[in-house]
View: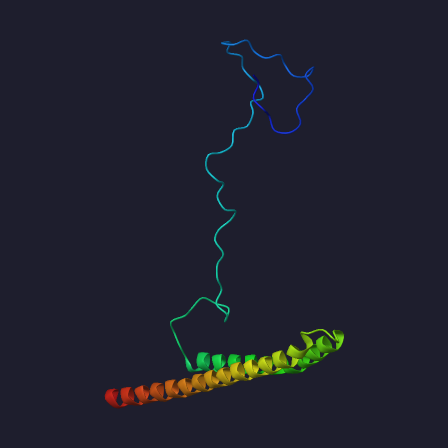
Length: 154
């Protein structure tokens, strides 16, 4: 009995005659055998990049804190600018499906989006304020330590 091979089976006239039982005939094209273990994943694991674009740094500075506050301000402004297009999209959605039952929920969905948008902008504003407060304290403490060091060293 011959072993099955992948792909179409050639016609019997092309196939070699089966080897008699007990003979040790060498097959020049043995059938491939599946690997017992799965192939490794292709390539290395992904490298996660922090949102600020570089690996974490243990050093914090006044400038770094001010930049994080500016990032919060930028995100707040970006979110605010989504309100107009979102309002237009809600209006277009409601107008495109008159008589459909979901149309009545569009106003509710719009109100929820505006509330969520305002909540996130408020939290981002609070975070920006906290970064600025921290930057100010960082500078104050840094100046106080420099003053103390000058007094000690004369």
